[in-house]
Length: 190
Image 1 (cartoon, rainbow, N blue to C red):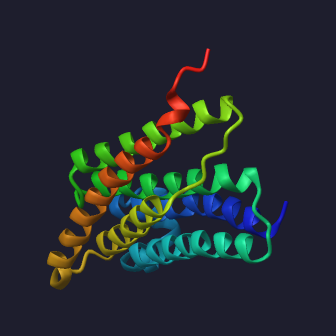
Image 2 (cartoon, rainbow, N blue to C red):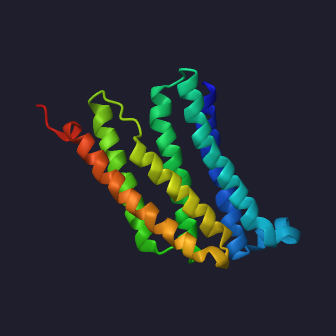
């Protein structure tokens, strides 16, 4: 397994401690407070740091893969999947914490299922569909939105809301673009 693919797998592994820290700090589970009791006020920031590190691996794995010609079908499939798992896990946690409306997360996750369906159909036809720029912009804004919502800083709540709406708009735009550009994949060739 090459370095970019290892970074993708590492990003997926980081989801577990990220979710445990974020929800453990929010719910103050007994076992969690027994372990982290002295630093409970900082667990959101530790979770945020893990999320940022995981997000940076997304940027890094692609750059390394392109620079050193290490692009693989594994990476083309797993990199976007790792992004989806990271961002969707974070947003589901944020819904539970009351920091983002559930309907926005439903739209975002629905988009991810639709795109995954397209990728499965394409794969069945021997076609690997890589992420495009709209999808990358969408993911970037979603990651920024998650960071702002985890930080939960009252003074920048307007900025957080603006980023949330931009992320939602990019989610819808990227879905429409993805369907349009790849519409031939869904054509029945029998």
